[in-house]
Length: 115
Image (cartoon, rainbow, N blue to C red; front, side):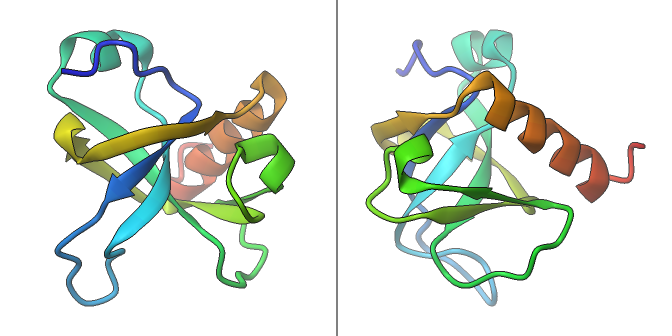
């Protein structure tokens, strides 16, 4: 079991089987669950990352490949938040800075109409 998963890390995730407009295949995701839940729970909460062209919605955070550790720049879609079993996680590929996670937090609030 993964016990060292931390909020702000990016992992490859097996999204299979995707249905409809859901993600499918092996794609990156940002861990957004708190570290207590990550340490003790069998699941974690993630947001999907995409390299497709996206519109600059307030629930999207753009991340460069240098910031993410991914091979390409990506967009983190905070309107696509999912709880997944930790067994879906593959290799860790990066970790976002505190400043970038502050952007993520703002986008989550927009997505969920918290502010």
